Image (cartoon, rainbow, N blue to C red):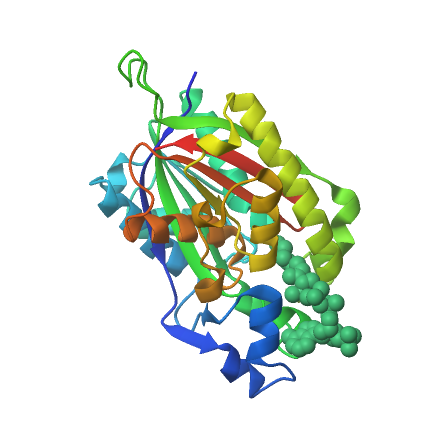
Amino acid sequence: MTGSRLVGSGSALPRRVVTNGELAARIDTSDEWIVERTGIRQRYIAGEGETTASLATEAARAALADCGLAARDIDLIVLATATPDNTFPATATKVQHALGCNGGIAFDVAAVCSGFLYALATADSMLRTGMGRRALVIGAETFSRILDWNDRTTCVLFGDGAGAVVLEAPTSGDSAPGESAAGVLATRLHADGAQHDLLYVDGGPSTTQTVGHLRMKGREVFRHAVVNLSEVLNEVLDAAGVRAAEIDWIVPHQANARILDATARKLGIPAEKVIVTVDRHANTSAASVPLAFDAARCDGRIRPGDLVMFEAMGGGFTWGASLVRL
Ligand code: COA
């Protein structure tokens, strides 16, 4: 059976843009190094009053407006983040209250940069089993607040933002006979806790009682990312019975332009089918996939009926992919 249908999207970015040149004025780096190694030219950084919840709420409102729904139509909010407003309660509950749809289900998912894929799969499963009719699936982050701004190997790579999609439970008879049904076609998720120390935050309530800073062995992460992503993309294609050539768009996690290129090449997918926003947004972790998706819908590239592959990999390691017919 085809899964939940993706009926709307929205996104939000902080007001302030920080260019590579501005970073180069503060730390030992250069626009040239950052662009050549990562493809990043700028990132958005949250300012006073901008938090993960406020960005998530703005993205959620935009997603609801996109499909003409009201907050009261939403039964379930699944929010992926590694930078919640508070250790608890879940940022999703803050968003629920801000939207004004109190009373339904709302919780956070922690899978770092794969968070949106984990959240999408969770919401899809819950809608398929009748736990609600419509869900908001949100990826929202303020990574700028867990970066070590003196560590040039990590602080140049990340940015802040939020993206949201509206999912609708599948109904029988959604498509005419012979027509390819819209909805989530196949999803695969993975995790490997043995790789914990390659990408992590060196603090937390139960260990240091501090928030901590992001630490990463970039070169190791790069190597695992290309292998893991290629494998999971092929798993999803097999599960859906679809050939790589049939995909209209890949919407990858925006970590590094070189990872995007290498992964697409391994699958034999031309670069024109890969949505790239890492140059503008940098790596916004759980927000990056829905932000890129919404950007490509707004500029008219991704259209109704398209076959779209989402994929991401992040700390844990966690990784996953999902194929959706719009
Ligand atoms: N500006 C200038 N020089 C920098 C720098 C910066 N911001 N960051 C690192 N360097 C230097 C290093 O100190 C090193 O110098 P050395 O050779 O004198 O020791 C040199 O650049 C090469 O560093 P290295 O880490 O080997 O570079 P790289 O080609 O692997 O690129 C990353 C670094 C982080 C861009 C790359 O490894 C990467 O993108 N990894 C994946 C990261 C990722 O996607 N993480 C998120 C997953 S969710």
